[in-house]
Image (cartoon, rainbow, N blue to C red; front, side, top):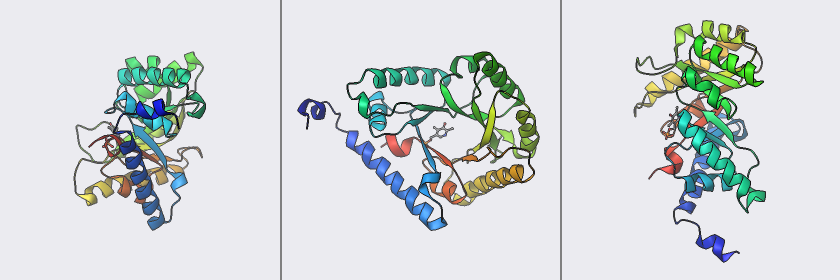
Length: 252
Ligand SMILES: *Cc1c(COP(=O)(O)O)cnc(C)c1O
């Protein structure tokens, strides 16, 4: 063991590993309960409230799907991470590629500057935004993958297309050649009432199923991004394929 390496580790580092293990345990137990495979669930680690040392730790542990909800922060952290992976003496053991997930509201005038960094945009909720992504992607020679964000809680302050308008919007997005619509994203309200949370996730799952059934979307439409630190068990039970977890890993 390299003494210097051990000494340079901040004290809370093992805490993160512990928390990730705990999360993985809960994912495995929940999957077992409902007859799903943990391998079918992607864990996106949301870094918006993390220190950079904590992000490095997560990467050292082999996690390479990271999420941010603001463009400026995503750009900043992504470039720091790129430098860390490129220059680190440990680079042999680090993931070669980091997949960045844009999980927050995306303004149209910011699309151009982040498109090449983002692996999946979770927050497409208007045709104008989809068109902007499509146009920028065409110019950059990209074909980004996107999710349609649906407002399943009917809270007026939430982003996301209303459930009743989602199918029509998906149809329109499907006509755009330079992006790939691969599923839905939703957020439940912040409440301890699990029934309210579950109702939102069920709505998203049913909508996802309906869109596939009616062939509004193609066979690549497989993802359901739902479940945060406070509600990911319910999300798994209702079919989530992507979890977005921040505070369960970094807080406390
Ligand atoms: C911050 C954020 C998350 C993670 O939330 P936690 O409760 O910290 O797990 C997930 N999704 C979105 C859209 C977020 O903004």
